[in-house]
Image (cartoon, rainbow, N blue to C red; front, side, top):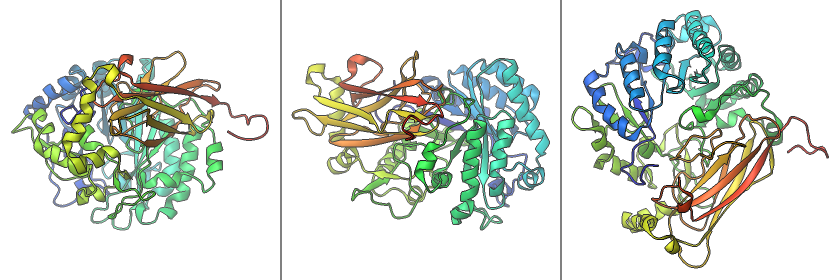
Length: 528
């Protein structure tokens, strides 16, 4: 467990090997007249590797261009794996030929390569090639199929084969069929992204008319359950996948156990969070009278190294934090620019680009943030120092975890409440509260924003440490386990700044359990 505070390393690092591309896709910035490409030099990449060795983040070895177009991509891949990092990358699939696939699998072994994501925007050849100009539909499908088959021949569980679909008016009707195609090619996950409207694509963004897209998203979600592929969407599309009657949605059962164990997929998807993101707006919404802040952890968890060496805080905000050509990534990550950005993102007045960000919504402001704004960072640091105190001087707490029912079908949303209260005095104490999922016969699998280990279901108990009193709601899908499986849920409270990998550091804990049901409706006719 890394130390608490701004100096700890990120969970994820994106390394853009190149901004150049071998295609000229209709919806991509590469096709714009003033677009300029560029490739990350080996010297700049080499200056990032020591940072990777120390912090061992999950590395996404791609950026805005076609990552495999970088001639030294295989060497970079090998260096990242040798640094002890898990790695994944996205590709348009044209250059991922069988010989390269074999080489990458040889280097990665049984688990170093966590995922490969193919861009796939249609299930019909003509439409696909009209969007992905310069690609051959059959070639891309063949390369994806070979990866899946080679993984099977080697008896590997990984890499997970993902597909990304950029949704727009011209291809929304193809969404269900493309999900089916992805499953036939061996896919385990299907991601739907929103379109950024560059010149020439005006009016194509579905955000302008979500109702038009609703039936296609709903059908695609049903197809995904039918074929056993995980279906993920950006926050702006969250509501499109649910029918108007929630009870009917909750009654649907995932029909296949084929979905990959998400413990091996790397970090949780941004479309999952404790408080589901709202649609972005220039005016922050209010929830029950509470002030709202951005539900974003990127400045604490993620960093992007661009092909030119510039370090960016995310894929949306065009605000360089520094360059690895001038400073080490460690210096940039812990530097004043990053610290200033973190304070802004956690405040009531984030930057305009953050306010309208399509990737992150809003959440109620926590007491930790209010303390920071009103009393300054010293008050927060004082709470963190509790971690160094003896156990007898730690706060007297109670923590509870309560799912809203005891049985769920696979893929249904497990919803529950986390509660924490102080027994006696000591208000204002800062703690972290985590949720742990424990499948039968397995080790404890911590799943938090800074989790010690990945988990087979993406419970995220607390995006930030908090004080009292507070009640949090968690809601996440139950994994695809055999009917009758019992999952134990454990809530643990630990002083801020203390590692939670040792039971001796826990202040309080509580446990509960949920069952994975079969498709059969229980006696009495009431579906769970």
